[in-house]
Image (cartoon, rainbow, N blue to C red; front, side, top):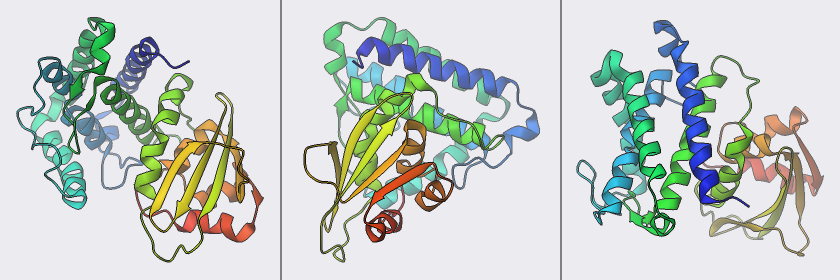
Length: 276
Protein backbone atom coordinates (compact mmCIF):
# COMPACT_ATOMS: atom_id res chain seq x y z
CA UNK A 1 0.00 0.00 0.00
CA UNK A 2 1.23 3.47 -0.92
CA UNK A 3 0.81 5.54 2.26
CA UNK A 4 1.44 9.15 3.24
CA UNK A 5 4.53 7.98 5.11
CA UNK A 6 5.77 6.42 1.85
CA UNK A 7 5.15 9.74 0.11
CA UNK A 8 7.20 11.69 2.61
CA UNK A 9 10.09 9.20 2.47
CA UNK A 10 10.08 8.99 -1.33
CA UNK A 11 10.06 12.75 -1.90
CA UNK A 12 12.97 13.17 0.54
CA UNK A 13 14.97 10.39 -1.15
CA UNK A 14 14.29 11.68 -4.67
CA UNK A 15 15.28 15.25 -3.83
CA UNK A 16 18.49 14.21 -2.05
CA UNK A 17 19.56 11.95 -4.92
CA UNK A 18 19.12 14.79 -7.37
CA UNK A 19 20.94 17.27 -5.14
CA UNK A 20 23.92 14.89 -4.88
CA UNK A 21 23.97 14.41 -8.66
CA UNK A 22 23.90 18.16 -9.27
CA UNK A 23 26.72 18.79 -6.79
CA UNK A 24 29.07 16.77 -9.00
CA UNK A 25 28.36 18.78 -12.17
CA UNK A 26 30.79 21.24 -13.71
CA UNK A 27 29.64 24.74 -14.79
CA UNK A 28 29.59 23.45 -18.37
CA UNK A 29 27.36 20.52 -17.39
CA UNK A 30 24.69 22.90 -16.10
CA UNK A 31 24.47 24.38 -19.61
CA UNK A 32 23.95 21.01 -21.29
CA UNK A 33 20.58 20.51 -23.04
CA UNK A 34 18.36 18.31 -20.87
CA UNK A 35 15.95 15.66 -22.14
CA UNK A 36 13.13 18.11 -21.43
CA UNK A 37 12.52 20.04 -24.64
CA UNK A 38 13.63 23.72 -24.66
CA UNK A 39 15.38 23.49 -21.26
CA UNK A 40 19.01 23.29 -20.22
CA UNK A 41 19.88 21.29 -17.11
CA UNK A 42 19.89 24.56 -15.16
CA UNK A 43 16.42 25.43 -16.47
CA UNK A 44 15.03 22.12 -15.21
CA UNK A 45 16.36 22.84 -11.72
CA UNK A 46 14.92 26.36 -11.87
CA UNK A 47 11.53 24.85 -12.76
CA UNK A 48 11.67 22.65 -9.65
CA UNK A 49 12.22 25.81 -7.58
CA UNK A 50 9.80 28.04 -9.47
CA UNK A 51 6.83 25.76 -8.79
CA UNK A 52 7.09 26.78 -5.10
CA UNK A 53 5.45 23.65 -3.75
CA UNK A 54 6.62 24.45 -0.22
CA UNK A 55 4.89 27.83 -0.40
CA UNK A 56 1.70 26.21 -1.67
CA UNK A 57 1.74 23.71 1.22
CA UNK A 58 2.44 26.34 3.88
CA UNK A 59 -0.27 28.68 2.64
CA UNK A 60 -2.77 25.87 2.19
CA UNK A 61 -2.26 24.82 5.81
CA UNK A 62 -3.17 28.42 6.75
CA UNK A 63 -6.29 28.28 4.60
CA UNK A 64 -4.85 30.47 1.82
CA UNK A 65 -5.52 29.16 -1.70
CA UNK A 66 -4.10 32.16 -3.61
CA UNK A 67 -0.33 32.26 -2.89
CA UNK A 68 1.52 35.49 -3.61
CA UNK A 69 3.11 35.47 -7.05
CA UNK A 70 0.58 33.07 -8.56
CA UNK A 71 -2.50 33.83 -10.62
CA UNK A 72 -5.82 32.57 -9.20
CA UNK A 73 -6.69 28.97 -10.05
CA UNK A 74 -8.39 28.26 -13.38
CA UNK A 75 -7.79 31.75 -14.85
CA UNK A 76 -5.25 30.70 -17.52
CA UNK A 77 -6.14 28.68 -20.59
CA UNK A 78 -4.00 25.53 -21.12
CA UNK A 79 -1.85 27.02 -23.90
CA UNK A 80 -1.11 30.16 -21.88
CA UNK A 81 -0.24 28.08 -18.83
CA UNK A 82 2.05 25.87 -20.92
CA UNK A 83 3.90 28.94 -22.25
CA UNK A 84 4.40 30.27 -18.72
CA UNK A 85 5.68 26.90 -17.54
CA UNK A 86 8.25 26.92 -20.36
CA UNK A 87 9.51 30.50 -20.05
CA UNK A 88 9.44 31.28 -16.33
CA UNK A 89 12.19 28.80 -15.34
CA UNK A 90 14.54 30.30 -17.93
CA UNK A 91 14.05 33.74 -16.41
CA UNK A 92 14.47 32.39 -12.87
CA UNK A 93 17.65 30.54 -13.82
CA UNK A 94 19.16 33.82 -15.03
CA UNK A 95 18.09 35.62 -11.87
CA UNK A 96 19.50 33.01 -9.48
CA UNK A 97 22.80 32.51 -11.28
CA UNK A 98 25.33 30.74 -9.06
CA UNK A 99 22.79 30.35 -6.21
CA UNK A 100 20.60 27.95 -8.19
CA UNK A 101 21.73 24.78 -6.42
CA UNK A 102 21.48 26.27 -2.94
CA UNK A 103 17.99 27.58 -3.74
CA UNK A 104 16.96 24.08 -4.87
CA UNK A 105 18.29 22.60 -1.64
CA UNK A 106 16.44 25.19 0.42
CA UNK A 107 13.15 24.40 -1.35
CA UNK A 108 13.60 20.68 -0.68
CA UNK A 109 14.45 21.30 2.97
CA UNK A 110 11.35 23.44 3.43
CA UNK A 111 9.12 20.72 1.95
CA UNK A 112 10.70 18.14 4.29
CA UNK A 113 10.19 20.47 7.26
CA UNK A 114 6.48 20.86 6.47
CA UNK A 115 5.89 17.13 5.92
CA UNK A 116 7.63 16.20 9.17
CA UNK A 117 5.09 18.23 11.13
CA UNK A 118 1.87 17.16 9.43
CA UNK A 119 -0.98 15.59 11.37
CA UNK A 120 -2.89 12.78 9.63
CA UNK A 121 -5.83 15.02 8.71
CA UNK A 122 -3.52 17.68 7.24
CA UNK A 123 -2.97 15.54 4.16
CA UNK A 124 -6.56 16.33 3.13
CA UNK A 125 -5.99 20.12 3.25
CA UNK A 126 -6.69 21.99 0.02
CA UNK A 127 -3.72 23.85 -1.50
CA UNK A 128 -3.26 26.11 -4.51
CA UNK A 129 -2.85 24.61 -7.98
CA UNK A 130 -2.95 26.59 -11.27
CA UNK A 131 -5.89 24.57 -12.61
CA UNK A 132 -7.89 24.17 -9.37
CA UNK A 133 -7.21 23.69 -5.64
CA UNK A 134 -5.98 20.20 -4.78
CA UNK A 135 -5.43 18.21 -1.61
CA UNK A 136 -2.04 18.51 0.04
CA UNK A 137 -1.52 14.79 -0.63
CA UNK A 138 -1.98 15.38 -4.35
CA UNK A 139 0.35 18.40 -4.35
CA UNK A 140 3.03 16.17 -2.81
CA UNK A 141 2.44 13.57 -5.52
CA UNK A 142 2.83 16.31 -8.13
CA UNK A 143 6.11 17.38 -6.49
CA UNK A 144 7.37 13.79 -6.40
CA UNK A 145 6.38 13.29 -10.04
CA UNK A 146 8.26 16.46 -11.01
CA UNK A 147 11.38 15.41 -9.10
CA UNK A 148 11.33 11.89 -10.53
CA UNK A 149 10.69 12.77 -14.17
CA UNK A 150 12.80 15.91 -14.29
CA UNK A 151 15.56 14.14 -12.40
CA UNK A 152 15.48 11.58 -15.21
CA UNK A 153 15.53 14.43 -17.77
CA UNK A 154 18.77 15.67 -16.22
CA UNK A 155 20.51 12.32 -15.66
CA UNK A 156 19.51 10.97 -19.09
CA UNK A 157 21.24 13.89 -20.79
CA UNK A 158 24.49 12.38 -19.47
CA UNK A 159 23.56 8.67 -19.71
CA UNK A 160 20.63 7.50 -21.84
CA UNK A 161 20.51 4.16 -19.98
CA UNK A 162 19.38 5.61 -16.64
CA UNK A 163 16.18 4.36 -15.10
CA UNK A 164 13.59 5.73 -12.69
CA UNK A 165 13.99 4.97 -9.00
CA UNK A 166 11.79 2.25 -7.55
CA UNK A 167 10.54 4.17 -4.52
CA UNK A 168 8.98 6.82 -6.79
CA UNK A 169 7.22 4.41 -9.17
CA UNK A 170 4.07 3.91 -6.99
CA UNK A 171 3.50 7.67 -7.16
CA UNK A 172 4.03 7.76 -10.92
CA UNK A 173 1.53 4.93 -11.36
CA UNK A 174 -0.99 6.87 -9.30
CA UNK A 175 -0.42 9.97 -11.44
CA UNK A 176 -0.63 8.08 -14.73
CA UNK A 177 -4.35 8.85 -15.34
CA UNK A 178 -3.60 12.60 -15.26
CA UNK A 179 -0.85 12.12 -17.84
CA UNK A 180 -3.10 10.01 -20.06
CA UNK A 181 -5.73 12.76 -20.18
CA UNK A 182 -3.08 15.25 -21.29
CA UNK A 183 -1.21 13.26 -23.93
CA UNK A 184 -4.30 11.88 -25.68
CA UNK A 185 -6.45 14.85 -26.56
CA UNK A 186 -9.95 14.70 -28.10
CA UNK A 187 -10.03 13.70 -31.77
CA UNK A 188 -13.27 13.28 -33.70
CA UNK A 189 -11.48 10.97 -36.16
CA UNK A 190 -11.42 8.23 -33.52
CA UNK A 191 -14.72 6.68 -34.54
CA UNK A 192 -14.30 3.46 -32.54
CA UNK A 193 -13.17 3.41 -28.89
CA UNK A 194 -10.12 1.22 -28.27
CA UNK A 195 -8.95 -0.42 -25.05
CA UNK A 196 -5.20 -0.69 -24.48
CA UNK A 197 -4.02 -2.71 -21.47
CA UNK A 198 -0.69 -1.89 -19.86
CA UNK A 199 0.67 -5.08 -18.30
CA UNK A 200 3.40 -3.62 -16.08
CA UNK A 201 6.09 -5.66 -14.30
CA UNK A 202 9.35 -5.02 -12.43
CA UNK A 203 9.90 -3.57 -9.90
CA UNK A 204 6.18 -2.88 -9.35
CA UNK A 205 3.32 -4.70 -11.02
CA UNK A 206 0.06 -3.24 -12.31
CA UNK A 207 -2.63 -3.79 -14.94
CA UNK A 208 -3.99 -0.49 -16.26
CA UNK A 209 -6.43 0.03 -19.10
CA UNK A 210 -6.26 3.13 -21.31
CA UNK A 211 -9.53 3.76 -23.14
CA UNK A 212 -9.02 5.89 -26.21
CA UNK A 213 -12.00 7.50 -27.97
CA UNK A 214 -13.21 10.63 -29.74
CA UNK A 215 -13.46 12.58 -26.47
CA UNK A 216 -9.88 11.86 -25.44
CA UNK A 217 -8.65 9.15 -23.09
CA UNK A 218 -8.85 7.98 -19.52
CA UNK A 219 -7.13 5.29 -17.51
CA UNK A 220 -8.56 2.80 -15.04
CA UNK A 221 -7.54 -0.35 -13.23
CA UNK A 222 -7.83 -3.19 -15.73
CA UNK A 223 -11.25 -4.84 -15.73
CA UNK A 224 -12.49 -8.14 -17.11
CA UNK A 225 -13.30 -6.43 -20.40
CA UNK A 226 -11.41 -7.71 -23.42
CA UNK A 227 -8.51 -5.48 -24.43
CA UNK A 228 -7.91 -4.71 -28.11
CA UNK A 229 -4.16 -4.46 -27.47
CA UNK A 230 -2.01 -5.59 -24.54
CA UNK A 231 1.29 -3.83 -23.97
CA UNK A 232 3.79 -5.76 -21.84
CA UNK A 233 6.64 -3.72 -20.35
CA UNK A 234 8.63 -2.84 -17.25
CA UNK A 235 7.40 -0.04 -15.02
CA UNK A 236 10.10 2.45 -16.05
CA UNK A 237 9.35 1.91 -19.74
CA UNK A 238 5.62 2.44 -19.18
CA UNK A 239 6.24 5.68 -17.31
CA UNK A 240 8.72 7.03 -19.84
CA UNK A 241 6.31 6.33 -22.69
CA UNK A 242 3.18 7.78 -21.05
CA UNK A 243 5.02 10.79 -19.65
CA UNK A 244 6.41 11.59 -23.08
CA UNK A 245 10.09 10.76 -22.62
CA UNK A 246 10.27 7.65 -24.81
CA UNK A 247 8.50 7.42 -28.20
CA UNK A 248 6.20 4.42 -28.30
CA UNK A 249 7.53 3.36 -31.71
CA UNK A 250 11.10 3.36 -30.38
CA UNK A 251 10.09 1.38 -27.29
CA UNK A 252 8.48 -1.33 -29.41
CA UNK A 253 11.36 -1.40 -31.90
CA UNK A 254 13.87 -1.80 -29.04
CA UNK A 255 11.85 -4.63 -27.52
CA UNK A 256 11.10 -2.65 -24.37
CA UNK A 257 7.36 -2.99 -25.11
CA UNK A 258 5.96 -6.32 -26.31
CA UNK A 259 2.69 -5.92 -28.21
CA UNK A 260 -0.13 -8.46 -28.19
CA UNK A 261 -3.27 -7.81 -30.23
CA UNK A 262 -4.31 -5.89 -33.33
CA UNK A 263 -1.16 -4.52 -35.06
CA UNK A 264 -2.98 -1.58 -36.65
CA UNK A 265 -4.39 -0.42 -33.30
CA UNK A 266 -0.99 -0.84 -31.67
CA UNK A 267 0.56 1.45 -34.27
CA UNK A 268 -2.28 3.94 -33.79
CA UNK A 269 -1.53 4.13 -30.05
CA UNK A 270 1.79 5.82 -30.76
CA UNK A 271 0.30 8.07 -33.46
CA UNK A 272 -2.33 9.48 -31.13
CA UNK A 273 0.15 11.04 -28.68
CA UNK A 274 -0.32 14.81 -28.93
CA UNK A 275 2.11 16.26 -26.42
CA UNK A 276 2.52 16.20 -22.67
